[in-house]
Length: 134
Image 1 (tube, rainbow, N blue to C red):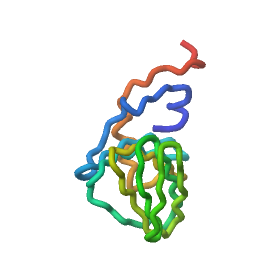
Image 2 (cartoon, one colour):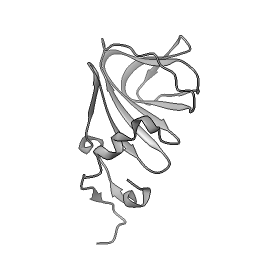
Image 3 (cartoon, rainbow, N blue to C red):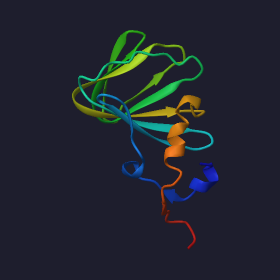
């Protein structure tokens, strides 16, 4: 969806389609021409998934819960309201602790391999924003 189509449109995470990734992991996305936000719903005991992005940095923000976020084998404890920059080329993964965790990942530019998340929400009726003309 182009950025211009989203201007002044209120979007709620709860209204976006959720994709089942694997047991204990779901995600939904909000994508404009220039940025991608991916909300990850992760649960303790999920299969961990160390991986690398060679071409872009990733900003991980913890919305709720507590997790260890590993970068280059080093654990960083994150709680609600904390964030961590994952540099391109660094192996990383998240391990939720005690309770489910909401992890918002931010990618600039949007990731090609997750563009299908954009297609999933093209048919949603968004609420008009406060400044939009009727």
